[in-house]
Length: 346
Image (tube, rainbow, N blue to C red; front, top):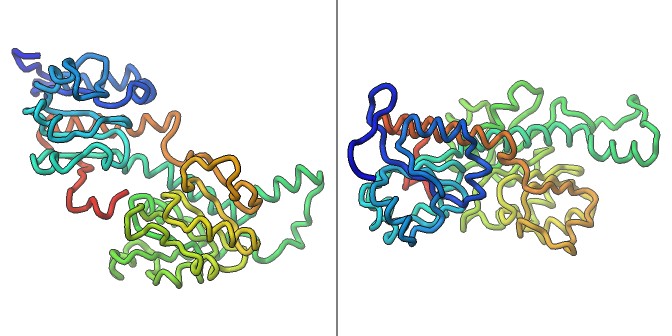
């Protein structure tokens, strides 16, 4: 991989690039159109993708690589990998979190890092808004009742607690996803509260939400939507006390990480019938068949489907291609990951 540096169609220099991820990830994410788009802006190493940086082929590829396009299953880019990649200057990740493969050695070298977290935030936010609205109408429970009883309830006698007009939604953390949820909720007649100790009152006003303490968020919201990353300080953050303080028939919606919630306490509170839950994540992520959450009829458990799947993966790849193009042109990343922000990221 030496010799004349190839040029893009517009005459710009194309950096040497390689793909580093599990082969299954590459097969799912990178179709012919995506590979062609990457090849237009990068001199892309031929397949197979790199999923082990210790092989002779990987070392040969890395020797000339300036830009790594990574995905799920990328090995850690540690000091040993970097020793084989003396020219590496940037990493574009086709998924969200970079914690699994970007090491301190990358930051110490000054490698630039980009992530497609912003693209992945959209389907999670869409799922969240859909579940907020469906839970307000008790759509899933009523559909189940309709199917089993073959009879409809009388809309004139439904509880005044049913519906979405004037409901209060609490957002726990103004993360990328949390902010997108706030944005998508604006057209609806909802009151939105926010708890995030890192968001000022002025910034909350710009977001169009009312900042509140953690206790008030749970006590005053009809739905609490969890968007905080799992960090040492947030493990078990949603405690038994907070769950018990929720409004009767309140809804806990979690698309973040299962361990942010005290799951044993959640099971107990659900068994009391006080609240409902919509859980796209649990702890562990795949619940064992005998876990008591399965027996809670007031919990809707979905198989971690809120994030990008199916045709939504194309959005991640399109963002990554755009980032590679920007970097190759010397314009820098539009979605950089900063080392100093890692403590606040999932």
